[in-house]
Length: 175
Figure 1 (cartoon, rainbow, N blue to C red):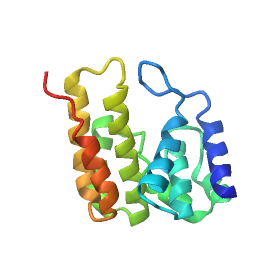
Figure 2: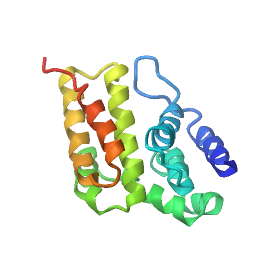
Figure 3: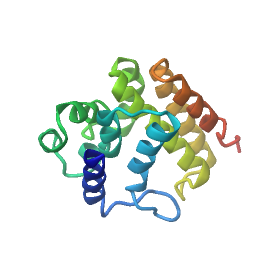
């Protein structure tokens, strides 16, 4: 429990000035906490490294956090999971999205759980409080892309896959 609290505090500090793209500009930290909540309370995942990685999953990608910092504070296993789900921000967005689909089937089972929770939370957020400037078509494209990623993750956790499928069912209708 202490490591989870430390990871939550670490993520909150790292993301302290970040906001989500929704109309309310929600605090970014709500997102990694939602991932950990989905894994623990909807997926009954109790693996500490997975839950810690869920809380930290965007720190390397979106903050000034290094892999070495994560290893020192949270151990090699959690840091490796974070590294597996981290996009290379030096690549164009379209390439990063393509690589997520391509690599989904090849990442570890623990990384698949974090990636699956991320897609569940993102679909829920887009359905409930989408980015203010996203037209319906962009929302639909995101849903379809997320499904392509999750199709590569299938088999890791049927219960959470069913949760994803229910979130996908909220795909906005075509305009």
